[in-house]
Amino acid sequence: MDAKPVKKRSKSKTPTKPKFLMGGSRRRFVVIILIIAIIGGGLAVYKSFAATPSWTYNVASNNMIGTSGASNSPCKATKVTDAAKNSNTVINLTCGGNGAPATASAVGASIAPTMIGQPFRLCAMMSGSGNINLNLSIPGTLSQQSVSTAATVSGGYAYTCTAKTLTAQKTGPITATVSASRLNTNVRVASMTIEQMPPSYASTASVKAPAPTK
Image 1 (cartoon, helix red, strand yellow):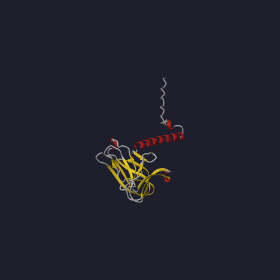
Image 2 (cartoon, rainbow, N blue to C red; image 1 turned 60 degrees about the horizontal axis):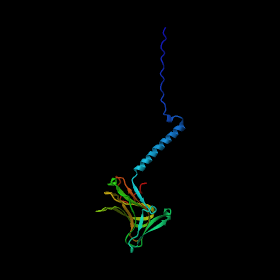
Image 3 (spheres, rainbow, N blue to C red; image 1 turned 30 degrees about the vertical axis):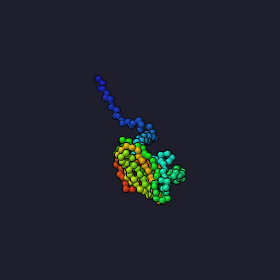
Image 4 (cartoon, rainbow, N blue to C red; image 1 turned 90 degrees about the vertical axis):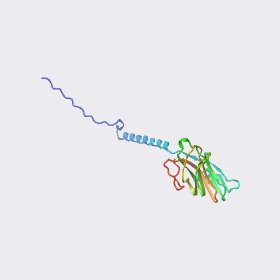
């Protein structure tokens, strides 16, 4: 009598874990931490590339200068060492009366063709007391685009920004100034920042705009 063929039992396939999840809870924990770190690093790199362009000026970098008013003006710009700013050199704008303005100024980066139509603003880190004027402009041969904001400085160092943005309409340098021309002004300018804002940024009615994006 012929032997009956023996049927082979099919082995049920048990789902296997990915290799990186094998080896115990400690190994899985380490792998998960590494994945989170890689994702976080990627987001940080993306944010750094997505950040809006900005240009910062100060005395230490030799790209911010002070200019006194005319020889007979009571408004002066001097360099002083300020302990409140880690003994860094700042520009002190003072006015013993009303007169031709003393200024802290810088010439910004040039507007490239790809920046046409983008809004910019000026922020200054200042302390002291008195009335100043922030001005941001893009000089042109036939006309000059500019935005100006009058502000009152009072107290310790804080950012004050132009209330409105300036939309670049042509290529060329950006000029930024902080000026003082009124009696009893004693303001120290530690730095200025010209910042390109996102196209969706809306100008505010207050000069106390957020500090420049880092």
